[in-house]
Length: 273
Image (spheres, rainbow, N blue to C red):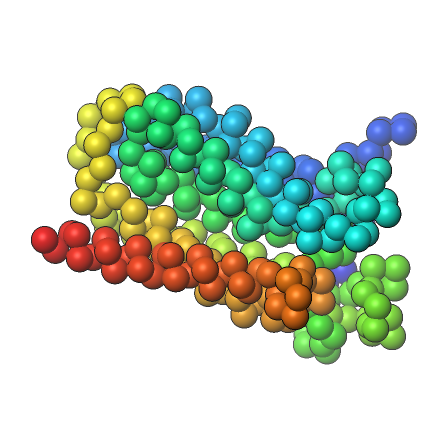
């Protein structure tokens, strides 16, 4: 059985340090470390990653919160002071991906970088950060699934149980399912990175890299793998964001899966020409 020790990592007088913030911050640092390491391994300049990191991270955090707030607009319209309280949770990964990607592609266009080439470098680190970040949900007693009595069940305090489930104490730890799925995906992307880029093949050219025939497979594989798992895990959750009768995360997952699938088909066709 799993049980969260609570959201507070450290209390110093009136100052509370939340596990959610610590874990999200650690995930960002892991992603940055991986991207810098992989760029060096491939012989790419690390400077663009260093230069874009702040703006992409900022856009991702803003997008993650804005996405969550917009799909809970009735609640936040009544409680506007909570909009900025991100330490309580409420960062939607799809919002982070959409806004972060927008900032990333704008940066690459402005500096004449091959966006797909560097995306292949960065993406595995993002999945690693997602795997770690899901544990922030564990400490906040959120992002759990329907009731269960499985041996790995998650205890949820009554105050955190959703309406209609207050009589149940144990739930599917969907945060754990997604964390393990993301970790598996990280190692898969590492394998593919070594397969498509077995050794350093490029020289340091900071701002004018040309796309190669191998640009894109890691990015597209990420979209397929993550979206496939998220679609099914989302069906277990009790806190999904909805667009009418549809779970918005499943809708977005289908769209991203199709983008990744057709991207891989295009990559395969291009690489055989």
